[in-house]
Length: 64
Image 1 (tube, rainbow, N blue to C red):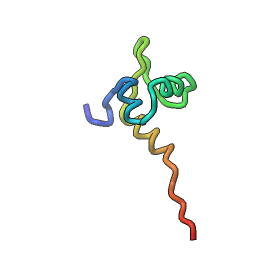
Image 2: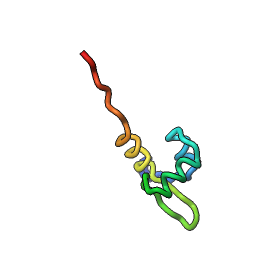
Image 3: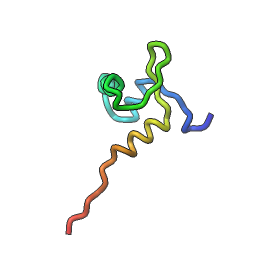
């Protein structure tokens, strides 16, 4: 399994994103972030977290 295929739990994903676990559960409930359900557990692919960060990054705007 390569790094992009790594599956992580809610705690590790929240730490990587720098948010509280409750915030991440809220995003899952509102379907703001792609996730995997394994019974009652919520899991995330490393590639999903990477993509979420990439798509929510605000570009620098230069002022002259």
